[in-house]
Length: 416
Image 1 (spheres, rainbow, N blue to C red):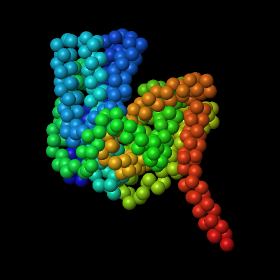
Image 2: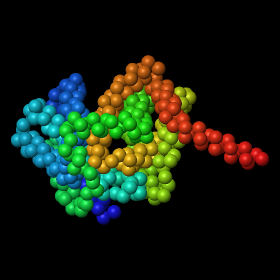
Image 3: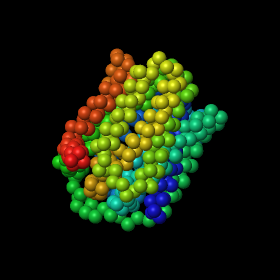
Image 4: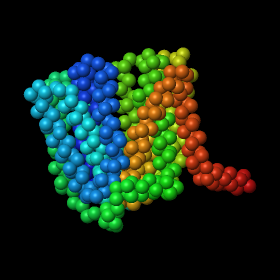
């Protein structure tokens, strides 16, 4: 714990800073441009470079110590925020400056995320990965819990430049904490890979994913989940709660809060029950996760004649449960990747995973949006999650078959 605590503290600071900007930045851009279309174009332009360069970034990171890359990334973010804060103080609101700032922040935030994931693996023993991933989940969610409220408060009272200055201070503190991490690198065998060309490294990463059946299975399952259910926050939840049940937007934020409460409780549960091998139950947890979302959809369909707040109370309960189960899926999955993917190619693996997710999520949102507008958000929610259950059953049909046969055998013995 003595080593990992520095990374946890640094992550709390950087995650808090990272949660403020996505909430406040759109408000400032809309105020500056006075146009929703320009605002949308702005964020599309600024996100594309980091998404497209993610695979190359993963290969590049492998050449260096992950502690140094993490320190460099967070320090660069501090410098960028300091410069932008000064420009704003002097009244330099040029659109091109804001675009460059946003592109660079997105790029180095992605670099920070990739390098810190591999650094986490270097600092934690394989036997304790699930335990510390659970703790990380708790801290990450606690860190971002009050960030949007604080960010909008500072923005409203002191202005955007003050928000950026606070981010700079948080990133500086995060960089200082990283410097205290004592690290004895475990990445043996990395020298051989460094001598290979960039193209060879990239192809090795793809080949590893393609040939390792267990890795490929989980990789594809994550893509399926991202396509079918990652649109909940943007499409299905507001489509059900606001469009269908006409609940006030002022209380809609409780949905995210309920989910976060479930996430925090789940992280505590994993940390306190580190002896449970959650990875062995991953297929059941996948199905259970989608079944909860199916229940939300059916509740919306059948409770329409009741008071809207009756449904909303039930929805909040399900969201807590959903947050709890989601982490029971995500933590073992992350731990599995960290334990099974060789350390010397982990950064390129997580880069490819992030790149694929960033491409598939917008497609899923587009598909879900069109389907929800045609048949309703709740029915779409049900259909999407039934499809996920079918995909999971297909992916784990051998394990499910063995479990079902064992269950039948047990029942048969008990009947005798």
